[in-house]
Image 1: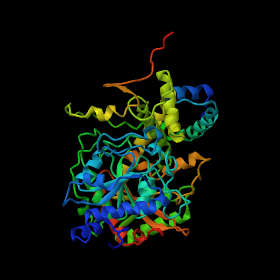
Image 2: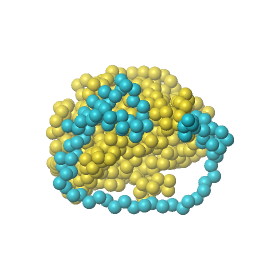
Image 3: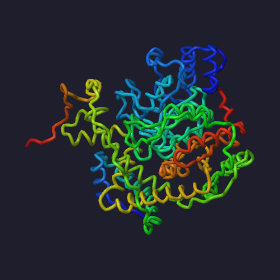
Image 4: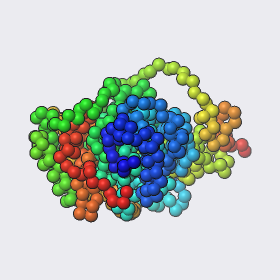
Amino acid sequence: MNDLSFATIAELKVKLNNQEVYVDELLDFFIKRFNEHDEKVGSALEIFDKTSILEQFRAQGTPLSGIPGILKDNICQEGRLVSCASKILQNYRATYDASACKRLKRFGALPIGRANMDEFAMGSSTETSAFKKTKNPWNFECVPGGSSGGSAAAVAAGLIPWALGSDTGGSIRQPAAFCGVVGLKPTYGLVPRYGLIAYGSSLDQIGVFTRSVYDCALVFSSIAGYDLHDSSSLNARKKDYTQDITGKLKEDLRIGVVDNSLGADGMDQEVVSAVEQAIQVLEKAGAKIKRVELPTLEYSAASYFVISRAEAASNLARFDGVRYGMRDKDAKKLHDMYLNTRHDGFGQEVKTRIMVGNYVLSAGHAGRFYENAKRVQRMIRREFKNTFNDVDLLIMPTHPAPAFKFGAFDVDKLQMDLQDYFTCPMNLAGIPAISLPCGMTQNKMPIGFQLIGPHLSEGLIFQTAHVYEQNTKWHTIHPEGF
Amino acid sequence: MTKISREEVLKIAEISRIKLCEEEIEPMIRHLEGVLSYAECVQEIAADIEEPSIKNVNVFREDVVIKTDSEKILCQAPEREENYFVVPAIIETK
């Protein structure tokens, strides 16, 4: 069999159709990829055995038939462990498939494992996982980003052609940029959250990692659309987003460049120049470029910070040692059992976020923090809406600087939180954004930028992103040693 | 600058149902003060602006009972007895 490590889904589909390769060979191949290389990277918490994967395979002639992928470990896969990379859920088995997982299986895809992540998706480096560190395939001294770091690293290292992640404040786009792959955070409500273990419910959204824009549209098409089980699900019809990929830009496409993001304090100059080059590529391809400002951007991270912690505190109240997960078995009284279970079961970052969340929601502080944060969120929404009257899409960097080293923010945790600076505004506004590779630093670390659109503009985003991709080579460069 | 007292952090820990060991209290206070002082900037612009909130709508669906195997759920409990979850004593006996 030829080396299929970095083949796209589109290429794998052709090979399967032509019977150059069979489903179980392909599965063997990718399981072997993890066996051979994941000791170095640490992207997966578990790779399932072949027999149990094939037992679930029921669809032939479907769009993702026989294509293996991996799911972030906060997405339920029936009968499999789902730990959120937390000790408190270490031995918990999902009792049903998340809607996204169910749809993928229906489309013939083969989920083959569980990807490492920051505990309960809280972090920007995958360092808060209770179980292992995931390394950046481009440089093992650097983090892969987070919280969906395992998903991003596995796709970047060619261990798997696609992965699902979740994005609450940038957890798909930032690791995609750090690892040099494509990462999409869809419109809020377009991919059902049923079966996604909640962090910040009004912000959480499942999305896709791939190595090409077409592949991203393909996987996304299988998971998007209305779901009865999710009350925040949008009434959107299922569609094939690969149809939007025409190879040409929309006529008279207007793209706004968010100037105050590129000029923000602390921006790495290599990132700025890579994003400027990406803008030129799109301009040369025919897009009209306009420079715009989003003044409220400066306050997004603080607003996101408050809202996400508040929702996390509420969502994580359910982990009480009663119905599932770990329990402190020595406690004699119920109250002590709660306190000890949560003390021992949650990691430091999670406990801190719960504390912050309950502080900003508590009597006397809610007005100052939570209500003001929600007001800022509404301002950001309006600002985006007004801006999209003048332009079709927006461009911003995905991250202020390339992937950092392990432990870089151990002392200054606030700086770690500010990793969300360019990504969380879209979660606050509920709008879609894709991160695309747009360059490499001198130290050979990937750089990414975001294409951002109004609600339900995924089609236009794919169309534009694909044209960009066709005019660059970044998606064809892969880390060495894999 | 948000200042947080020892009593306050213990109260929040209690609300959060998270035990704080003695050596965890000081670092937690310092961390909370740091991040909350940053988060306070939401007040700067939000204070004078009235931005109407988006009306929330209730979403309903039919209450249909779907047959599920409760054993799959119950067997994951740390402690159970038949169809019940077992917890430590709730009411103290004197």
